[in-house]
Image (cartoon, rainbow, N blue to C red; front, side, top):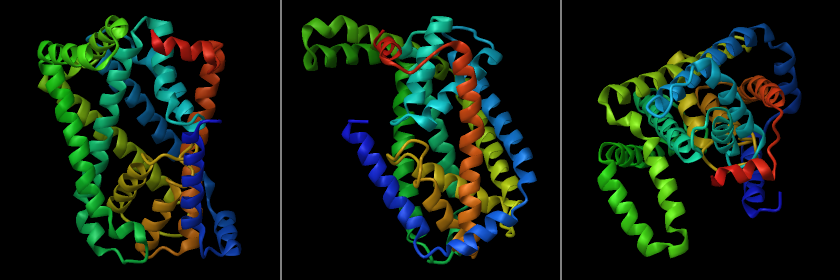
Length: 334
C-alpha cells in the first residue's frame, strides 16, 4: 500500500473511471441495470471457466518438458493466480501461482515464471490479432470516443513489442547455449561478483522454462490454444450481451475484447478498475450503443469476469492453507 506504484495505479484507475462515466445519466444507467436479464450470465460464466481449464492445459503443456503435471492439478493453481491478479497489485497472481507450483510440485519459480511470461506474450499476440482481423470493423466506427481513433496506431506499436518479445524468447529457447553464454557475459560485467552464482542459477532455470518453445509444433499448439482461450472469453462477452437491450456482431465483441485486454496492461488499481471499463464503454458507444446501456453492460461484464474466478481462487487458496504474506514472498527468491 505504501509503494508509489500502487498509488499510481489507483490514480490511473480514477482517471479512466472519470473518462468512462463522464456525461452518464445515472437514472438511465440504473434503469438499464435493473431491466437486464441476468440469466445469461450463467452460460457466460460456464464458457469462461472452460477457457480457464484450457489455460490450465496450456500451462501444463508449457511445463511438460520440465515436469509432467496433470491439468486437473494445474487448474486450482491457475485459478489462484487469476484471483491474485484481481485483488493484489502489479499482477502479483503470476508470481503467486509460480510459488504455489514450487510448493506442490517442486518446479523452480524461475522456470515457472518463464512459462507464464510466454503465456502473456502469446495472449498479447492473439489480442492484437483480434484487433487486426477486425480493422474493417474499426474503420466503420464513429469518432464518438477518443479511445477508438488511436487503436490502429496502438495496435501497430503493440504488435512490434509483442512480436519482438516472442522472437527473442524463441531465439533464447532454440539456442540455449548461446543465450547462456551471452547471459554469463552480461552477468559478469553488470552485477556484483558475490551475486553471480545466484543470478546464473536463476537464468539457467528460466531457460529451462522455455524448453517447450524449441519445437515448432509446440509453438503452434500454444498459439492455437491461446486463440481458443480468447474466443471462449469473447463467447462470454456474447452471452452477457444478451442480458441487455443491444446487439452487435461477434466480430465487434472480438474487437472489444482485444482492445480492453490491451488496455488492462496499463498499470491500474487491482482488478483492472477503469482500464477495462473505459475502453469497453468507448467501443460500444462508437458502435452506436447508448452510453447507459454500454456502461451497464461493460460494468456487469467486468463483475462477471472478476467475481467468479476470484471466489473460486480464494476457495482453492484457503483449501491449501495459504496466505500471501512475507514468508510466501520469500520463496520467490529461491
